[in-house]
Length: 109
Image (cartoon, rainbow, N blue to C red; front, top):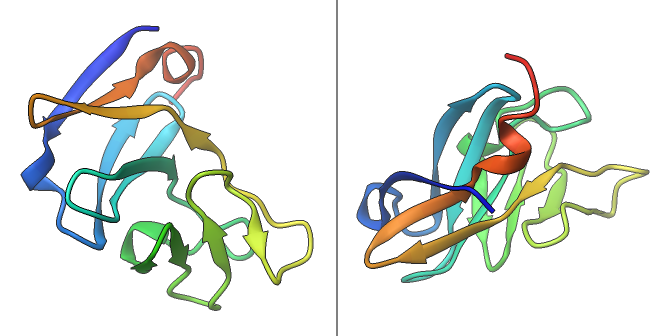
């Protein structure tokens, strides 16, 4: 894997998110706990709602437009028909958030 340092863990608020621009588009980086971080596509498949502006609760995020709830580990929508978001590998090392760049580098902006 090709890990990309995208910033300090403290740059991502607890129960919040930050955006990272990639060749595939914007990726939302979510922080659910002290050092628990997930990365997923920012756009809700329903109406394109910005998931980085949604409510983070547990290991889930709720779309701010129509309340679809997504599991941040699997990307699966809960209670919605065939909804799913892409998820990306992310880790925290020495207080830095690292995103797996291998998949992200394959796409086009």
